[in-house]
Image (cartoon, rainbow, N blue to C red; front, side):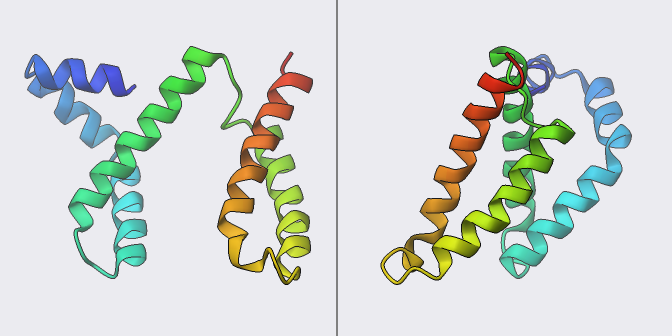
Amino acid sequence: MLLDVLTHLVSLDIVWIIDLILGNILWLFLFYTAVHIATDGKKVVLGTIILFILAWALMDFELAASAILFAGGFLGIYYITKIAFLGFFEKMPGIGKNVILMSEIHFLATFILFNIVVAA
């Protein structure tokens, strides 16, 4: 999706860009609201654009790698194990300050294992 958007932006396809914006107006407002809440109203437009770019890049990665990222099965397993994982490591005295790093390691491990075991 990111490559499609970049292609249409470079070719100045205004009709396609307006159609994209109006077709995804709900997502535009949801992302805008999420960024506004997360940044306390500072640089909201830039944050929204970055959030869209990241979402489109993840969608392209999912297609290019034939990996499952936004499927219900993966998200279900990920969130259930995340609660247990973070609950366990949050209470450990030495690792408590590195909870964000442990969360990222958990995501990568779950993502790789899910795509090897289930999707293969």
